[in-house]
Amino acid sequence: MTKKTMSKKKVVVGLSGGVDSSVTAMLLKQQGYDVVGLFMKNWEDDDDDEYCSSKQDLIDAVSIADKIGIDIEAVNFSKEYKDRVFANFLSEYEAGRTPNPDILCNAEIKFKAFLNHAINLGADLIATGHYAQVRENPLKPGLFQLMKADDGSKDQSYFLYRLNQAQLSKTLFPLGKLLKREVREMAQQAGLINHDKKDSTGICFIGERPFQEFLQRYLPKKPGDIKTPEGKLVGQHDGLMYYTLGQRQGLKIGGSRDSNGEPWFVAAKDMVKNELIVVQGHEHSLLQSDGLTASQLTWIDNEDPITNWVYAAKTRYRQPDAPCEIDALDKENVTIKFGQKQWAVTAGQSAVVYESNVCLGGGIITTAI
Image (cartoon, rainbow, N blue to C red; front, side, top):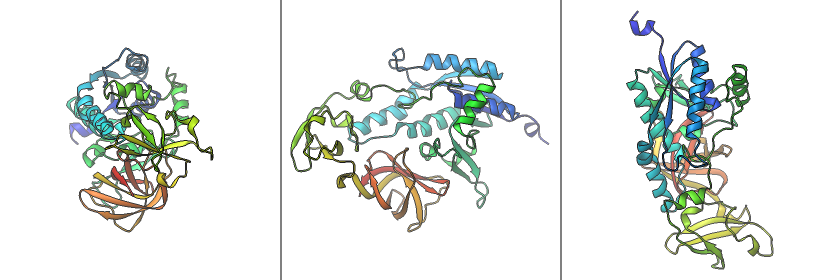
């Protein structure tokens, strides 16, 4: 038996100061791993304003590490985040699309920059507090599958679909079989100070803040007309990049409803004319799509899914799985057709494909069809 197999495996845990990563570290320590915490600082702009909690999060993370009995290191990935994630985020919004920075953040920061740093620290594995699971494919030994979490209300596999075999082979998700309620109960029983800490929301690493106000710091206003599909002028917008398909709040045209009294929703953007197209009613036909095309494809097991086979897909995180078929597929693009019309399919968001509880991968939505 080699010295390596006799010794404990070293796991570096992304310790954010939240309850999920804290319980992740605690469980791995209890399981006998050599655990080290790593606190990632990934945003420096306006770090002292009311929406950035990184200072308090670091204090919490250090306190948790001390309570659990593990070492912790802080590392600054803010340059990598700006170059690899935020620059893409801004260019996509400027082009009229709606990106999902959490997905790119996972692929480029949490499971690339963080993973590389952890390996340089001598880690055998990394772990995060995501609600997901990894297993070796029972039919293809040596290949790994990304699985949904047992807690369907917290499952985060949607955000992880761009992870590759090398990343999954080095990753542990200890919370994958737990309910969120159970995680908080474990934290409370262990005396962790953050057992009832509010979950973080908002843009990955940037926090929960007024979105349009934040975006205006980087993308100046470009006002234009808000019109109906028939060309009727109903209001003014501040800039097409501040709105997304299906958006209802913040249009400031509530008083101009027609006689049917239905609320307005964003249905399209005319980038050439700088016009925001709105319709009335959640079920309007312009908000419904039979399918989509997507590009920048990632298939986790490096094999394309089968065309004309029934899968399920999500076009946004908080959405039930929708039965679908892969209608056409090549190395660059996929066409997905749904069994039932899908609401507000949005360019820039991700279409993620599942077979039962296995996440197969997906791509960035280019068009709704």
